[in-house]
Length: 150
Image (tube, rainbow, N blue to C red; front, side, top):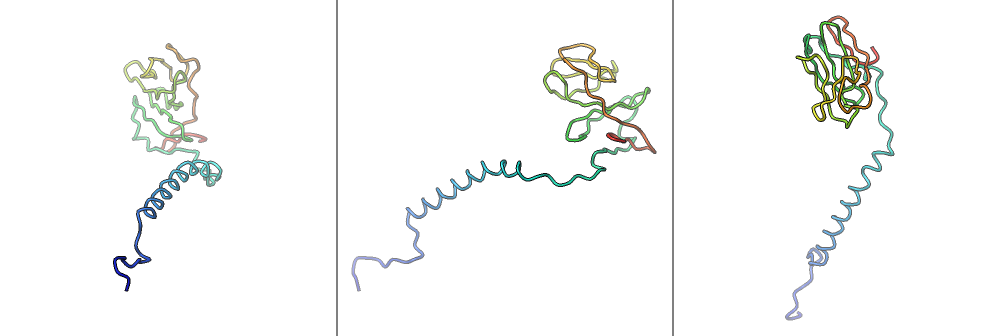
């Protein structure tokens, strides 16, 4: 027997092995964190159903005089129901990209950031907005509001 020296076990982890394993894990995690968006970009999205281009709501969700913001084709869209009919427009202000709101009292669409104002057809009434809002097709059929290619 050797005296003074403990037996080396294969299961014993030294500080150097632990530090190297820890650093390898951290470096691998950082590389994965950087590469994940690249791989997500390169992989094509799944096929989308034809019905996914249409947003369906119950007509009771938007009473007359009220509005609701929905996601249509991954773009915020404001749906407004008035006595004159149903209106759907992109809800992104053309000035700096803020989400617009419906002003029930003045019957106009207002940007809360810089006070741009639009009418129900998306035309600029006042403010710094350079272009009108884009109209989106919308109609009511059998107590359902259909937004999109309806």
